[in-house]
Image (cartoon, rainbow, N blue to C red):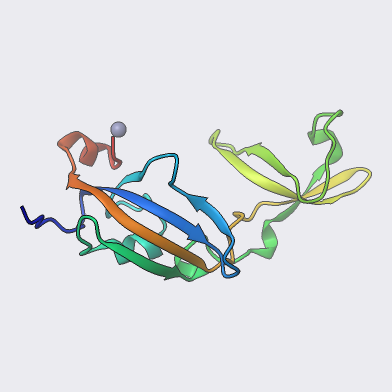
Length: 158
Ligand code: ZN
């Protein structure tokens, strides 16, 4: 039976993907975890990827290049922030480049990277790790269905 459905707004998409950077380094992939499921047209994934998905058929594969503006944004120099050393556990061995977990005022977890360690202060880079990167996606639409009423109400896939 031919599959007539194509990716459109308010559909739940299951996507197999591999994400590489300009130098070919693989930084993320769905292999081993199962496809990424999301509600198309609700900003659940980066804009550059969502835009390219419209009209794709089930089982269709595509190579997509996403510029930083349509991905995780440009690197923001203001996202370098200084914290007192006392804001970190005393026994934490802070090293440049290491990832630390931060909680924002809404209680969401963010990953930041240690940029510089001083005697009394620590500079953290709050940019998304993929900010400024051109993203190379290899994708395949592996499942496709209409969203349920409940999913549309919630604005995400179940
Ligand atoms: Zn829900």
